[in-house]
Length: 354
Image (cartoon, rainbow, N blue to C red; front, side):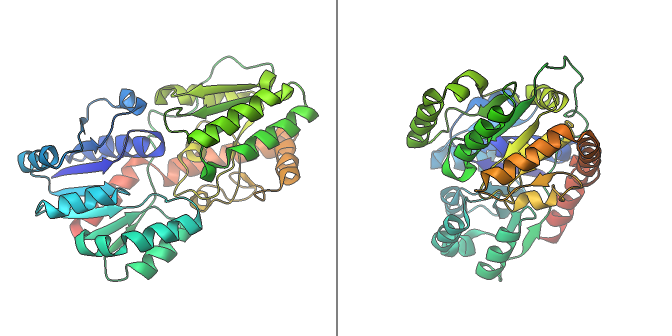
């Protein structure tokens, strides 16, 4: 069997998902290729997987005709779905959704995409996410739907023992865009630094994907704040394998990852932090409900309530019993329920049913 996964660009969670599942499926004898319409810094993470950067209809048609894929999984890119459908592709064409932004944005997008999805998609694929499950069930009841968790590379990505920092670090991973709610992280971080001046903030993003207006706001806020100017370090386009080291360092420092998103399809930053023994404090952004069980594998705070976030963060930093309990449970939870092998089994079952 030969499968093609497509997306806009190799960045963030989608780059991780495509890389991890391709390697896992290739172990099961499925040849996997990746197609992106534009390049990106995430290309440096990909090894041993045939990867194409192309957007012209002629090039894509040539690729499909040459490789004769049994299935093509198109994630989010509705124009690519239509393009492949109109090219007369005769294999199984699956449309995948990993998250479309806020609930209102998701509704607008699905309403816009509805007719084209019904016309071209043989099936829908998405992670366990209450918002997506409800909306897709309502909009596309006539199309077969498959819902299972995204995978992590538990064999190669995880806790790395290293030098322990003499100060706690609060981390954030995402894009400088409204749905990631980055400004709330800066507010939470500022309050925590006021409580403990030793705290540092590590901000990880892809600088090529930042919304221009949001990026200007980010720079203005940081430069205008003496606390943030001194304590916040921005890391852009860190190679994926190095993130395990950073997340392990954050956990060992006595800090945590704070996830401030409005809506997440899955939440790779949260899952990978848990795998690296870095405790997580998060908003209830939908997809993370499969990852975070309150006071068992992580903690939630009420989005918009800075003092609630600060209170929960302080508990994580000073209550070693609670912290160690959450870290232990979180790592075990990810390894048990989100392994690449488990994903492969579910993917193969889907392919046998479509």
